Image: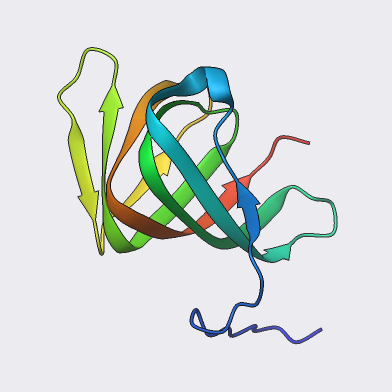
Length: 118
């Protein structure tokens, strides 16, 4: 295995389709696609590209995640706080143990790194 791994975000192959758990959907019929790029041998860290469209749902975060938006625009709404619009170039961390609403404004794509507790 090489120490460095480079990938072209325009040539990722076939994504894994998905959708939020139905009882967490609050608006529309959101769907997503995930292109997993790499997972560590112990499964504790994964990285990839994720794309979402069409609605809003409650996220219940169980993992630590860093991401950067590379396409589109969405809104994150934490309970009791003003909505936060996210768009191309925005980077942020989502911490475990929290929940919020993710509302898609235009189809949104992010690069992510997720850390699972193992």
